[in-house]
Image 1 (tube, rainbow, N blue to C red):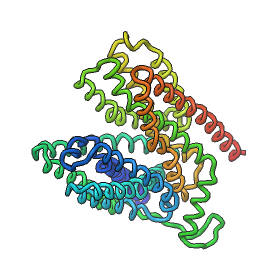
Image 2: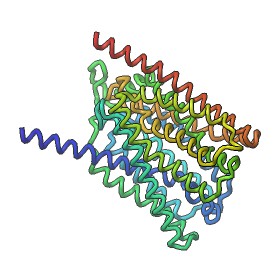
Image 3: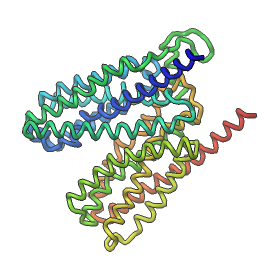
Image 4: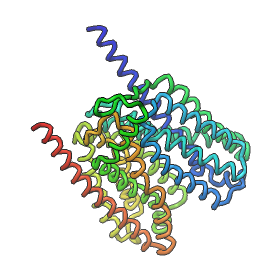
Length: 429
């Protein structure tokens, strides 16, 4: 009895230690790929990059990420997380060492292509798979909620750490090198630590029929099973609708500046609250409501989609020219809170649709491929709308599209929830 208790405590400790390593990895692995978030102007000044060159590098990286997710449908169930996650983190850090030399555009472009491979193809779907497998059915919301909140906190701390180094070294080329080296060292250290915290996956050589066919065929069969599972596609498009609305909240910031005349200092504070504060708040809240109150991520998404659509419909029809500034700002944060809480748990329904655990990696890869697709084109669409429809007219179109995505998400979540109930009834019969 005592031995069993010790083993249980040890397993619990390893579970939370593993989750912590994933949170630190997820909170740092994208800092180099999104160097522009904190160092856009220094990149132009000290790396001699134009707007077009930075945009081209981001676009090419996004293109590679799409195919990376496609390849990961096979890779994520073929190789162990104990190997893949450390390799992706250490590889990302190694690419950062190249970037720290402030290379020419050609090498800058190559570096961004490599970052897309390490972060999106080798890390992200496998990290999502690992988070799902760390928790049982009643812990999915909590696990994914803690992941979202934790990586938001790590993201913030690491970003401010790099900014501190940049300023301390003189806000010049050496400062940029120092910041990039910091962004490189952190994932390398986390990659080494994660190797010791993560357990090996047992990669099966037996297919679903019990035949011994080898690891490659088993992984290929798992990929095929995931692609043929219509419920995985439903979950993936639920992610798609959340992410489409998420892309839209980017434009709350210029909206408040242009329409409300929000001062730059307040605008900066608003941006930090919207991007980091809501992420840290939305994760735990979404996870708690999913696991403890509604006991269903799909039900939570259905309600949150509906609330998002209602608030957006109200917001887009308010008299903004005469509306109180702080009330208008508050409503955008309410919408952001709904969307960040959905982002925290939008992969949790994989447990509800009873995806076999042995094909979790393939399912998460397919979900990532479809779900994150809006990031590859929707910012361009939204930006073009604002360029061709200046002022309130353009923002109303974007807000209408966000509302439409929320309504589509509500309808899909409703259908998926009904399908899950039917599956549960069939199993109970």
